[in-house]
Length: 288
Ligand SMILES: Nc1ncnc2c1ncn2[C@@H]1O[C@H](COP(=O)(O)OP(=O)(O)OP(=O)(O)O)[C@@H](O)[C@H]1O
Ligand SMILES: O=P(O)(O)OC[C@H]1O[C@H](OP(=O)(O)OP(=O)(O)O)[C@H](O)[C@@H]1O
Image 1: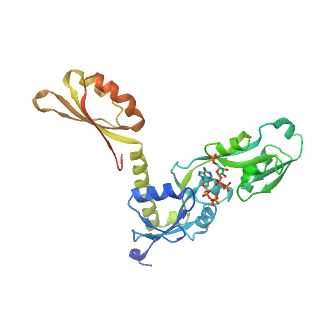
Image 2: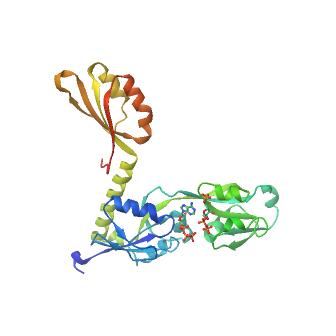
Image 3: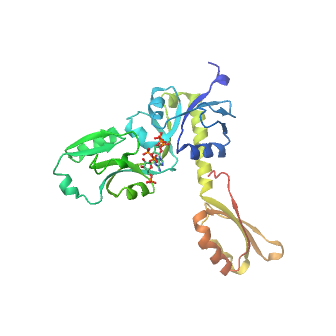
């Protein structure tokens, strides 16, 4: 196949984690045009073709090689025991897979008896229950797992994000089984193909720089001469700040990229040191 006709085959999770993936792709210049039920969106990039699939199916499809790369939850990589290369953890849409029981039940008593455990995650649940020596029967669920206890199950192994669903169903967490978030995964053979690996690395750099930029803002300010050293010490910049002298030796113009979370505490301190004309603006990419 000629290099110029090659395409990287990408599979993306539809459903709840799609939004954040689509936004990240948009931020690196890849736009998808798809309607709600469209599984093959049109892409503005000639080097890739994209298909949307259920998150549960993506890891195996990437392992099998019908797609070179995929974006899905770590939980389904583990649950399907897929042999794929993890390129990146995007860190978004984090969930915990937890074991939970009705809040009035005593765990020690439960451990003395044969229990019914409901879970969508058969493999993850089996491995957890065996490792902890439970006497159990596993009931595979197809959603709405939290509704099973107390009459249809004694324990559930399910994902939780805010914890609201567990609370509403009067369930207490007894253990965290796995932590999951959205991952960028690749097929092993694709990682051996020079053209594909180049595409994958380029994407990785763009994703990393975009995610790094999301956590930072640029601050510009005028610093009076007499407080210059104190001000520079205060600034938590990435490397060293950019400094230019102001006209008439009035002080310095300083420019730094700082963490968004630090701005709130930093600005009052800067004002106290007589810093003026502070500008804060968003960054698109940070490449170190
Ligand atoms: N708050 C959340 N609740 C459930 N899953 C979440 C949450 N946040 C992220 N995820 C992740 O999303 C993926 C499942 O997505 P989603 O629930 O859209 O799939 P689905 O089961 O096909 O959808 P549906 O529940 O509508 O059938 C998993 O990887 C899961 O870990
Ligand atoms: O901790 P929370 O923020 O409440 O979110 C977690 C809940 O959300 C999901 O259910 P979903 O709405 O996808 O329905 P499902 O059980 O049918 O998958 C998941 O299965 C949990 O039950």
